[in-house]
Length: 183
Ligand SMILES: Nc1ncnc2c1ncn2[C@@H]1O[C@H](COP(=O)(O)OP(=O)(O)OP(=O)(O)O)[C@@H](O)[C@H]1O
Ligand SMILES: O=C(O)[C@H](O)[C@@H](O)[C@H](O)[C@H](O)CO
Image (cartoon, rainbow, N blue to C red):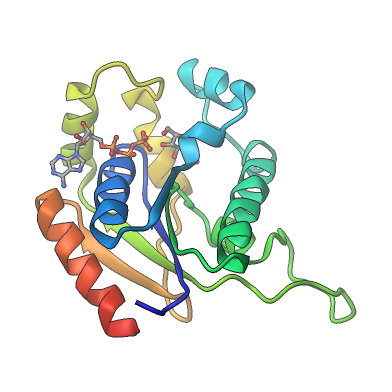
């Protein structure tokens, strides 16, 4: 596959980003990054204490993730990133590293080519999955705040929305086919 693309598997906590993202990367033979591994300890502590993150907490984290994807794109590598990317502004930062609309005279690199895969589904199903999940720092109590923050992707964003009610294997197959049809 020649297509130079980065894929971000997005959604609320518990939507399946890490699970689907890692399986998708393996199926495609691409590198995989889990955004959770790049949260500063202050963010992880805040979430573990049941306090939702805010823009100030997330923007430096998203800039770091943009740099990782930019490095791979510039070295000709595809990658899959599992990242909540809840707001449109967050997805803009992943593409451009800019948290505000750039001024015309601001010199900047071309935006990264990112396909956002939004894992979408009912809050009660996600809550059940979070209750069953053990040993993760993110409490199920923060799920509602995730939905309150979520701005689902919409045109002209480059995205595919997939139901998280499907088995992981089906989500991966559907996403892989969509990506291959892009090339
Ligand atoms: N399609 C699926 N069908 C059934 N169970 C799933 C599916 N996707 C994920 N799960 C399960 O749901 C739980 C949450 O998945 P996962 O940890 O990948 O979500 P996440 O979006 O990465 O969460 P967080 O953002 O909190 O890290 C896990 O126990 C996982 O095994
Ligand atoms: O943006 C956020 O609020 C966080 O990234 C959450 O969405 C993640 O689920 C958390 O990092 C646990 O994995």
